[in-house]
Length: 331
Ligand SMILES: NC(=O)C1=CN([C@@H]2O[C@H](COP(=O)(O)OP(=O)(O)OC[C@H]3O[C@@H](n4cnc5c(N)ncnc54)[C@H](OP(=O)(O)O)[C@@H]3O)[C@@H](O)[C@H]2O)C=CC1
Ligand SMILES: O=C(CO)COP(=O)(O)O
Image (cartoon, rainbow, N blue to C red):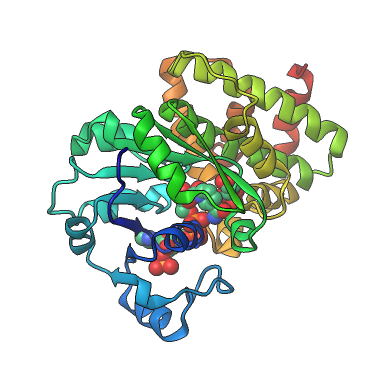
């Protein structure tokens, strides 16, 4: 059986904190890279992350913190990347250590900007990590609910089933059920697209559409997702599995969702800038929308919801006009 060895978390936000809680609950030791020394000092003094999920307490004797990514990468075998996608490259730029022999897991639900690659492809193409050493974490999982020990299902995707099972065992607990899959690329793309569709759901909410229409939007969103996945990575998958449809629904409906919240503000008439300033946290779907639009220029999939969200966020076309056009195309 594959052994994940020593596990480190890369990133200091809310999902990183929730994953750290899950992993250290099992292993009783983790490495943790955070970019800011002042955050690390405050974490050790307070016994919790000073800025995110502050209710989650840690035994800091079980954590080796460092703001030097190289120290963490040298000392740990499994690296779980949980930075927002727009910042991934800036952290990786500091790397002087090879990571091709590490077990690299991405919990990022975004695309690497400029490269327009999902994270596993980026690690493979730029850092030479073989696909068998690459995994992803997907599934409907708001960090806030994981922090509250509310039952959640996570799916670990990896081409190497033994590695997927090994990490799934590390994450499993009474409140976390884990599933495995070999569809890494499909899970990563669906995780990006559900953020775009959650922005659409938020926009419709801001425009005062009701639950009846939201359900039609979600039905059309999962069809759009399936059309895209079948073109970009055509394997047999069941798009109604929780890692695809479940994550779409939780992000589209939950008040915890940053993407839905961001969309709601846009629907109410906020500009993108003012919505981003007010949110303080990252709505990945804003960046994902542009990347997906560019990727779909090569894939030529019929994606009216993606197009509408792109036009609203990047072409400043009025949400009323774009959503009206969508309502005419929906089934
Ligand atoms: N939150 C959730 O429920 C879930 C999130 N995810 C995914 O996890 C990933 C991480 O998101 P999440 O943890 O929620 O993020 P948060 O919004 O909670 O945290 C943002 C993180 O980004 C860092 N950051 C902010 N500005 C910069 C910058 N200019 N350069 C470098 N780093 C910066 C912050 O560091 P600092 O504090 O030092 O400013 C902080 O660590 C995303 O891809 C998201 O989609 C997946 C599942 C659930
Ligand atoms: O991915 C998530 C839930 O599974 C979190 O979504 P938000 O980034 O919209 O909060």
